[in-house]
Image (cartoon, rainbow, N blue to C red; front, side):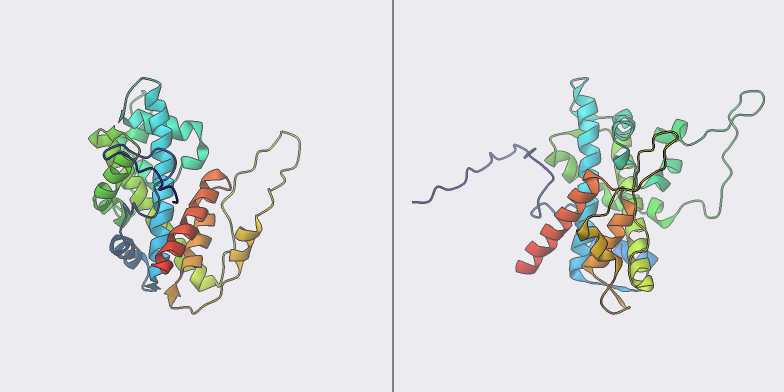
Length: 260
């Protein structure tokens, strides 16, 4: 008889890696709602699942980084300072950066201005007071709390708010870039980080074949497909482990969805 795989005990979180396709914290209707706010293009089912998977992977990476910082103080409840620490340790986690201007967590990291007397000058507002992504960040709270539970931690309300905002802004930017990929017929630029030694020319790292293949798009100009979301992911995320994990998870999520 074939041995049955061991079942995880009820209530015990699986901390072996990013949540699998059976843990969908950001449902397809929510993803489509975000896309509708930035583009009139139709969003395919696989594109919505891919975008949800990428966002889940990014948020999981941030939560894990914050969890490591909290563990050093023997805490399982995450604080905003753990988020700052996670980003400081891993620059790949610095995503959804438009959110940083809207939260006191990053006030000291976004260029606070002082006058000659050392008094903080009020930040000048540009355009609308709040972008749609920031105003709609609360929609992600349920998904964020699911991810926190899946990683075996909780978070104070301020930390949940920051994770909500980062998820909302990141997914909104992902939607905009996916629409741009459709308009331009492929991706023309890729997010990347290159280490430069002073006095030596910067040599960009070679792009993997799987990423390079996304530079040319096939399909109609009215629908955002899965590959458009994957191409947008290469723009939003730096060339590193987080991007590779996000692309792999999106491939797996859409393959499993298609099989079902």
